[in-house]
Every structure is written in structure tokens, then in C-alpha cells.
Length: 480
Image (cartoon, rainbow, N blue to C red):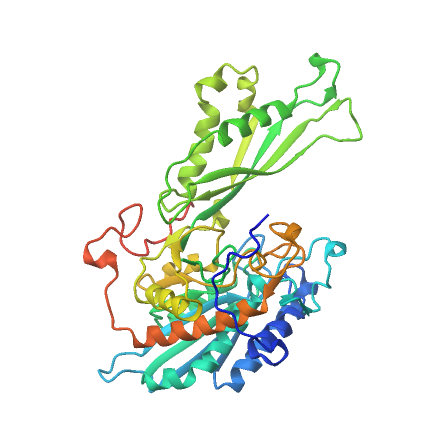
């Protein structure tokens, strides 16, 4: 159970019904824009883009819509995207150099609601109660999208005063699934257009309980795969009539789960292997040993690992198990396991050496909330991993709403903590205070960054850039 109130945030009375960020976030939440892997969900994706494109156009933004498809043998479904751009000043500074360009990356697709009967509100009603806006996707990440675009409106006069600044947004409707035809394709198009943003803000949830407690400067990668174990089906009472695939699978999972990685650092948690799902046998046939067993696994890994090295580790660990496993009665059955690593869809880790943007955001959090923001690289994968492929010199941070819905420090039922209210959970919600304060943080970050004098990141001053000692934005390592 969380403490009653461990927040040090500044609070002001907010008129939720009259607030631009809350109203836009609510309009977006009301659109059931589940990632359109199924063609039936495509119209909702288009409507979410419509709402944002119309809103941005009214504020003077350049609007470039796109749809991409293909490019993958399995996940080739068409994806709606939009690029928005505002230019303040003449597009270049007094020395004829391009204006500072800061780009926000976000997504409007959401995960399915799960068991709708467990929700206390309708998942797509956008209900406001007890100081929260409820709805699937409000935290991940429609609330952040609404906060950023309304922050640009608030910052217009300050940005004009800087003389030459460009602000843009890349929004996709495919981040929660394959991400083949979303942000990556828009970044590729942006590069072909001759654009080169200096910095990117990924608006994903970036802290746990309290808004602004953490700003991400990287993320671990993700590799998913399967184990398929061959056996012989038979009667459980007659050992000569079966070969149980569950025994080999259980030993394999024990071997791989026993590995204690120590490759993390102050910014990144260690690599970890986890079994996600198991499939074997029939609960309605208690005397039948199955003829096969399967496991789905996931590895979250630091920039010191690659999909290739992780696949090799798994295969070697099963071919040459540790001493304690060699004497196990099922050790010889490990040869029956077929290992598949989905390296073509692996999410690559990335690390961005903190410089002007990270400092601008930290100063903004301090100004708005009065609290410090820690830089780290924990959490799940995001579209930030695609940036280095196209703009290796750009700085990247991730800044958004609290992952857990901001319920730890607000009015809430204690039993909800860690079970309801957070991203991808039942009763996903965002505190009204957090939505509005995130807009203020984004505005101040934009203003701070526009004013900042150009400075080289630590990597260019001789300091080590990351855990591997490689320069800023090492190119993602591909496993195939």
C-alpha cells in the first residue's frame, strides 16, 4: 500500500471542464483507437488522426498525413500517421543556419481494454471524477499528446521572441503492436525531406508515481522468442509409452532464469530473461502426457547486449548447461528443444547522452513542480529507439505522465495501487493536475531549449557516453 501522500507537487485549483489539455485528451480518449491490426479498427485510427490534425491546423501548423503498409511478412497492415510542424520566426537564425528544431514523438493507438466488466467506468467514455480523467490510453499516451500540442499554443509568444524555432510532432497509430509502418517510416520520410531535428521528446510515461520524478534518456531493448519441445504422447501411468516434453521445458526455464546479469549501470537496469506464457497438455485429460510443449519468452536487455548475442547465449546455455543442471535427470532431454528468437522484430536499446534538452526539461520540472527530475533508462521499449537510425546526432529524452496513473499521491482507494489505474491496466486514468502540469512542463521545456546556448554533450568532451564507452547514439545493433 502506498503512503497517503508522498507528493511534493505544487497544486492549483483547475477547472477541468474549461481546460484545453483536459478537453483535448478527453476527445481523444473517446475514440477507441485500438492498434488497427484488424481492419475493422482502422476507421477509429483515422478519426484519432482527424482530431489532432484539425486541432493543429487551427493553430497554424503544417499538416502532413501519411499511410504506410507492407514491409513485413506478417505485420504489413496499413497505418495512419501524421506530421505536424510550427515555425516561429523565419526558419533560420541570423547566421543563416537552420532554426533549432525540436520534435515530439507520440502515438494515438491504445491496447485493448481487457475485461471491460472490471472497469468502474466505460473505457472509452472519458469520464472525469475524483480529480481524474478515466479511459484506455489516457496515460499511454493520449494525455501526453494533448499536453504537448496545447503547450505549443501556450508557448507561441515566448517562442516568437526567440526569433527562430521550429517545433514538430510525429504521431502514429501503431506503437503498441508491430511498429513497422509508424514512427520509423515517418522519420525516414523526414530525413528524405532534408529535415534534421536537433532534439526529440518522446511523450511516453516516464515516471512511476509522481509526475516529473524521472526523465528517460534511453531504454532497454526487447527480444521475444519461443521454445518448442518435441515429446511422445502417452498414458501417464506407463512411462515406456510417453516422453514428457514438460520436463525438458521446465529445466530449460530454470537454467535460463537462474542467470544473474550484471550489465546495468546507474541509468539502466540489468538484462533479464522472463518466461511469459506456457502451452502444454489438456486440463480435461489428466492421464494424458502431451506430445509437445511450448513457451513464449522475453528478454529486456541493455545496450551491451545484442539480439545475436542473446540468441547465442540461450542456445549455449541449453547445449552446455551449468554444473547443477548437468546432473539433472532431464538434462539429456534439453536436446529436444527448438529455440526461435524473433530477431527481425527485436526492439533495439538506445542511450542518448544528456545535453541541452535534458537540462531544459529538468529545469522545467523544477520550475513547475519544485522537485528534481532523475535521468534514467528503465521501463519498456518506445519509438525513441528508431531515432538514431536517421538522426544519430539528435538528443533524445522521454517525458510524460506517471506510469501508475498518478494515484499514489491523490485521492484514491488504497487497494487500487499497482492493480488499477495505470497504463494498460483496468481503470486507466490520469490526474487532472498531472495533465495540466505536464502542459506547463512541456511549455517551459520548449522555452528553455529555445533559449539555451549550444553546448557539446559529455561524449564530445571526452567523457564516456555510455556503458560500452561508445559515442553518443550508437547505431542500433540489428540481429539479422
